[in-house]
Image (cartoon, rainbow, N blue to C red; front, side, top):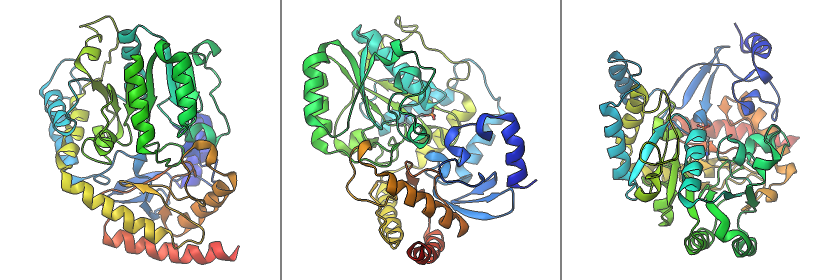
Length: 420
Ligand SMILES: *Cc1c(COP(=O)(O)O)cnc(C)c1O
């Protein structure tokens, strides 16, 4: 079956024909590619076409698709059983590795997705502080739990919905939302609500509404205000964790959050999330404390094996290598007239404007241009995320050969963009 016939069938099974909304290609137009198999930074679709992948399953695959070490670890683990619903040694090994990479991690719990990690961290923060109100930032995405689907980045802005329907107003009211990079709004918020706030959650490297680099001073101010008001600071590092440095953005910016959430890379392509941080805060989590949180497949041995095999290969030299590649790829991409590619670590955002730090700074004209770029690049065999509000992900598999393929595609697309 071809992509097109599969998508026709998919439309009869799933809303929008997909299992997650942005995959539907609604923003950029055209038919979604059905992936048949993937290796390194390449994939083949059901039409038999090969593409260079710059979306990389939205972040988990920092080693590339189907990395041999990850596959070996998974097949070894799976021979011993797919799930136990009981403690097993691989949880210990992954926890140890996480603590090596993230020195402030005192206690943690494994869950099965980033959404679950964040949802659970919020509950722990509320249980610990005995406060209800939370603060988030416009354009930051923290998964799809009710209280966080307010002005939450790509999936929502792609479809022009500031906040999801189906979220009761009463729940939304406990979530305050501020623009990023606005010191005045932050100070006013804390004056009014600081002492009622359970926690502030932020993507320290906001990467779900394009890439919106924050000033170090903004994040430091946030840390100080939280401490002064007894509100917990939660870094949502589901994307930036193990991506921008071994210890994520917390290490890169030298700011210690009270709790941190991980997903994506931590599972190496399998469904894993985790939340953790301060021992005293995590002490409220059941069965040690009164905050309930559980999961049938939490700490799944096969998923733990994939995560561990991935994190074991992430030594500090990997990060300088990846950052260097990001500079090369960004430079190559900027041969497209008018295109800028801000990047942090191996996250790159192709956008037709400069210097954006807040979600309301993204111009719709830039997104329209991106949609055109997306299609032209796809025609040249390069798969970018199907939304201009999403970033591109590099991996250790994006080697010289891939860069050459990319440069050739860019050269052709540069001419086409110029001509219309
Ligand atoms: C992807 C993401 C999530 C949600 O993770 P899922 O595994 O998709 O539930 C949460 N926060 C951030 C910052 C993310 O990028």
